[in-house]
Amino acid sequence: MLLSLALHMYSMRCVLPAAVLLGTAPTYVLAWGAWRLLSALLPSRLYQTVDDRLYRTYQSMVLFFFENYTGVQILLYGDLPENKENIIYLANHQSTVDWVIAGVLAVRQNALGHVRYVLKDQLKWLPLYGCYISQHGGIYVKRSTKFNEKEMKKKLQRYVDAGTPMYLVIFPEGTRYNPELKKVISASQAYAAQEGLAVLKHVLTPRIKATHVAFGSMKNYLDAIYDVTVAFEGTVDDKGQRKEPPSMVEFLCKERPKIHIHIDRIDKKDVPEERVYMRRWLHERFEIKDKLLIEFYDSPDPERRNKFPGKSVNSKLSLKKTLPSLLILSGLTAGMLMTEAGRKLYVKTWVYGTLIGCLCVSIKA
Image 1 (tube, rainbow, N blue to C red):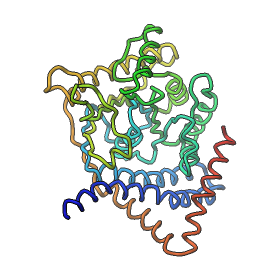
Image 2: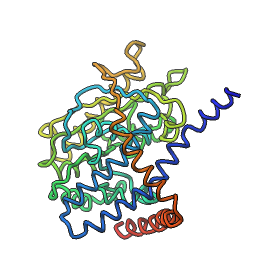
Image 3: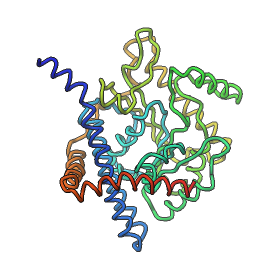
Image 4: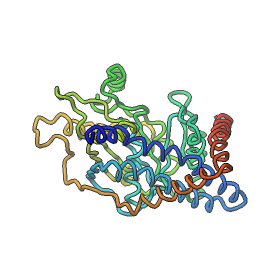
């Protein structure tokens, strides 16, 4: 009986995070919406400051589940400054967990509320979140010829002019690297070879547009570029072949691999501005990532596998940074659901908030 109970609890352990993270969404959107209305006649910088604090509160709760609740081990390599900076964060992309990992680093610099993403256009239709992410400073982009450089420049310039703290996350590969999608990897490698670029094994050939526009728009505002390389330990099969890393849901529900994060801080003066040179520079940065990942996954020396070169720090996140946010948002949501009027407001927020959000992003499209 005890074994049965233990197995049941094990299988149900992702229910609590899902219930809380999704269940508190209407509460969070209501709080943000109220502030948006109240701040309509106030300076935009004041609105952004409070919005960043609200965003930090929600994302701290997310990190409670992904770090404190799961007990995952975070190993940091390289040079992550203690103090927050205005930066562009460039990382390899292999899992939906990558979005959370950006927050894992930002919270350690007291910059969690300033994280903003460049995302693929389809994500703007996410219920409640899609519209809010854009309002918080996220930028939705379309691929290839449909990429709207002018719109991205305009939005970034607006934030620079307002003095908005910037922790802009970009995944230059444009899509997730999945070792099981051989055709995608082969096409990426063929393109690199055709363009006279080095062929990469554990990452896809990076695309230059978003990085070039972001750097060009903010070069005088930025402090640095963070080149981040992420590897999940335990994602190699018995034959030594790399497997697909866990998704967000799998990460919460199953065994968590150790996450190894290598950070290389690059001074902005070392980044070329002209597109043709930046393209070469970005590809060279991904060559460095690829070498790190080859060492991590494929090194013939077992002692060198499952780690990056250099010294690592086992970084643990204090409950003081995450638990208060969980208690605040959960408490407010529970209080709302305890009354009939609150329950009606909660449901209406899900329904009308989603519809209004979709309408807003479709008008801007």
